[in-house]
Length: 89
Image (tube, rainbow, N blue to C red; front, side, top):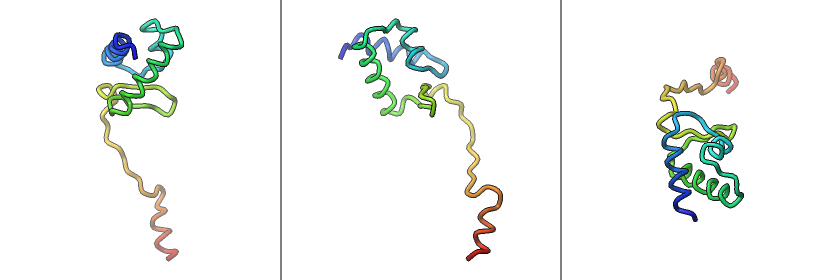
């Protein structure tokens, strides 16, 4: 693997403060060759597997420092479904 390209990709990702896609990364660094795109894919996948990136359902990525820290509302059963379910037993 081309270590200099990997280092450039990692620096670009770490400097990013927002969601990004593969095409934005390619334009930002100037990746056009298929071999370079394969290296980019492997580096992004490695960062994702290491838990350094968050992936949206639309295929976009964000580094964890930029993902908003919000409290999640846990809903077991919306609309009181758990009450109806207890009555059915």
